[in-house]
Amino acid sequence: MRRAIVKTLDGVALVFGFALAVSCLAPGSVAAQGQFAGVEIEGKEHLSRLLTVLQSRAATPATGRVRITHLGDSHVAADLWTGQLRARLQAQFGDGGRGYISAGRPWPSFGQQHVRSEQQGDWRTDGLRDGLDDGLLGPSTCGVASRESGAFVRVATGIKTTVARTFSRLEVHYLRQPMGACAEVLVDGRLSARFSTRGPWAEPAVFGLDVENLSHDIRLRVAESSNTAEVRLLGFDLTRGEGIIVDALGINGAQGRRLLRQDPTTFQSVFAALSPSLLLISYGTNELFDRNLSMTTYARDLDTTLRLLRASAPGADCLLTGPFDQLKGRRPPVNIDALYGVQREAAARNGCAFWDARSAMGGAGSVRAWRKRALVQKDMVHLTGGGYAKMGDLLADALIQLAQAPR
Image 1: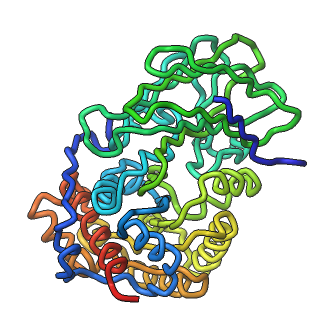
Image 2: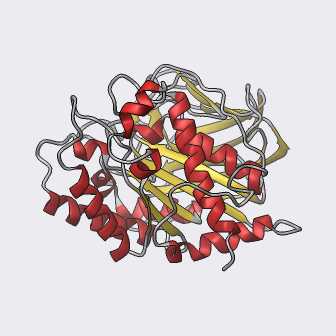
């Protein structure tokens, strides 16, 4: 079957039920002053392309675009950890826009930082239906679809935030298919474009629209009603020329092997359109709570997953992060040290750098101290808003320190 990216060039409910006002640290932060005392990234030689473009962003005049695509589980889905990383890196190297976000609200509590998402009408969620999905989803591994005329999804920037407020380019990622319906794009309440999602076979496609570099309220509306024709959306990409873009593509409860259930051609095609500079990969928590997990099987699946990601974004560097320190009941998960060993070895085999998030928290058992400081939730697994912000700062410091180090 022939599939390819098709481009048209014409034109907060949070997961854990709390809100966070993310603070931006100025370029004069600890890392920017050269006083780095955190946990360094291992295998920094695997980040040479990323560091080159970050240094271009730090030069005068700043040039280039850097996209970091963060894939993971619920720690990533809420965009609190990734959101602070976005705020810090954009403050340091320049704002490239909000980036890629899943369309609509694929689950009821979906919500991310620096953007507002909404949907109205009858929308089906794809990618979360336990074996009923076809894998034609792209890197977010979920999407929404509707056959109802007038049903719409909304994405808006600049609402109660100073981070990633504006964008000048909107790209709608959708599935072109034989029973595709027509869609309309409204920018700030005005009809700006209409396009068809119909095509001879199922393939990922992109509709692009240039807009004024401001905050915008975008609505994509189904323009016709049918018992069979539908608009099937994968996501929105909101960018503005050069600068830093940080995508947060997480799914609650996900393990890394979830990516292996995606259609590889669709997965790789959407990644090709995004063209990330860094794949930031953060799975492991749900693997630790999987009673049937075999470390041998996990090592094999992780290698396969990393090969898929490297093939999907051959121009990107790769950074794997270990899971946070956590407790299963009153004790650490029994496999956490073994899992860390597997991840480190897989990262090295597949040309990826590695960051030890548990050590960044203070090492084994540090989750208890974080709980006392109100940085970890009662489940001793998920962090609070302040905890995720701290982890975002720690990772940002490690990346900024590498970018500023002599090469």
